Image 1 (cartoon, rainbow, N blue to C red):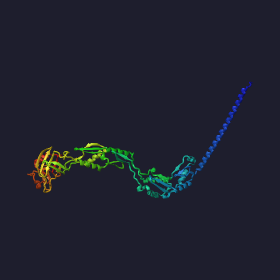
Image 2: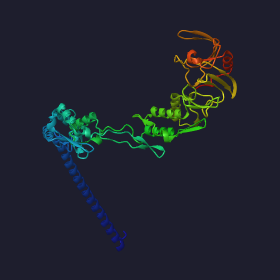
Image 3: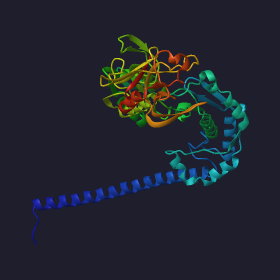
Image 4: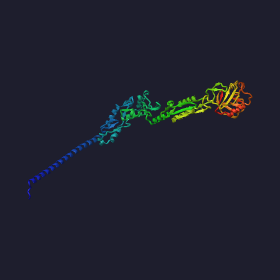
Length: 484
């Protein structure tokens, strides 16, 4: 057997020591693990006891942080919660905050009471006692609708007297609107006003009372009547664009050497916008402008300076000849142009026109009748075709032929002139003033002189047959008949 050396002996001793140390360390770790398990089990046990105890405690009580109609009923039984709610209602006061006014409603004003005990029991029964711990981190709340009673008539009477409804405190909301500035229309911002919607106010107050709110803000509750259209509304922006498009209208009236211009400087105050953002054009202002056009261009019935065939200058007024603006049609056309925003040059809409438009607008083709001289001249394109003595209306009987400048109404061959006590056939009939006209008078043997004073016509201009024929064959509706 081999003997161990000193070195080997030492190594064996070290191995024994290491083994012993390892064993000791393992034993200590086992002891610590057991201790930890015991501590953890103790903690779990304590928590479980607390949890189960809490569950038992909250079996007939509301959870922590639980609110009913905004009243804290934490750890209260239903009876305790009922007492707390009833006591709270006795001192209940609801503050209603307006924009610049405040009103209050007290419990005594409306006979406020609580009758929700049965509902409290239902809530408590539905509460899971084992979930009480969750309420510590996530408290719950309930609103008991219809559990608060009050006298609705008293509430209504109270609301009727609110300062918000006094006339001096009510400012009507105002839509955004338009203003003409520096050549275009701009949007003026809407005004909110301070008009309260009574139905919405009553609803907000009733909901506030039932939920136990102490303060309600009318703006937050949205009970103020708002303008229908604000400055950024699609309808407002569209209307602004349409207004400015119409404002760009430019109508240049050019006729007979006269000019008149209609543009934004004139029409900017012709527009109005209704509550639905529809644009209206003021017909009266358009009609006034059409009248202005008529004053500029009308010649019908005006006094005309006329140089007679004898060289004398006379002023002739009256009659139905000349230019006349059709104002009703002109109004329609102006409105149509404005709606399109047109830029055009045109002449006015005339209902009647003369031969030419310059000077006295008679031109060089016309019939000239001297009532005092009892004579007629007929010019066509400046050439005298015929002149003759005539007989006009009977002066002694008040049937004088009226002075004035007239247009030919029509001409007819083989007409029969009738009156109160006569029936006279003529070959050439040319009326120009109602039943007064030019015609042949074959029953007369003489014309001119003073025949008309006592033996004149019923107002017509009696002509020798040949004179009547020449005029009839050459006259047309554009040629004026000048009587002076």
